[in-house]
Length: 346
Ligand code: SF4
Image (tube, rainbow, N blue to C red; front, side, top):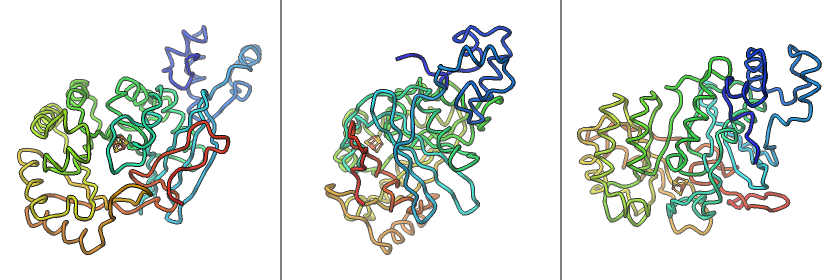
């Protein structure tokens, strides 16, 4: 596969396209991030340069499907250069702020038992350019995006170098100029990578899919927990927090009868001692063939009250995107199918 232009910073574009003077590469970078997809449209480049580059593709991916939920959440399915499909989601909050939820891998190897993406297995890591292109497609369709969460398909920490490279590109002032504090990387809890991210000193936010603070329940739900016990996870989070001084979000997907008991709340209290966190309660989004139950509203509210009574800062994530299967844990696409149909519940 040829390197993708969307995966390059201006100085890398200058080398790759052998551009002299170098400010031409900055112009190309600016055009790419304005959403221009052909060199012919880059009107401040000399005509002979545009002509010589006219067959060089700017994007490597295309939208093969789009779905918009009644709550305004949109999901796009992208076809990649090799025929793989991935999904990306655009979330709009009550203040009209737009957040891109990006995938870092096609599929995922982590095997979390409550997650639809896990049923695909891992097809491959995405390159930085493929991550950036998800943002460019979403922005071209839905307008200016201010925030990014790496919570789509895949475990971002298992592809951290490409994720960080995509962040450098999306943060570049001549491009999207997305503030690093407006970017969140989520992980199922790969502790070595949490430390590595802390060592980069990038002021991005960290979200951890804790799911349960009971060792045996977590091990049952998340194979990673068998290799990385809670003690090890907590040490890495303390390290991250010492380095970054940032509050960490604990993602807690609430499943009826699994992790919604009083003792679960108490164990969570012990886990977050010595950490500055906010716990994000996400009622489990139903996925066909997975053996879990969505908690009813009473259960969700009562678990939240238990956490509040234990002085744990808590928020509830609204159930956005369900009708397009774009909600948390619902992303999955049939691969190499002619219509790229969604495997999730419709
Ligand atoms: S929850 Fe995240 S890490 Fe776990 S299988 Fe799903 S995509 Fe992978």
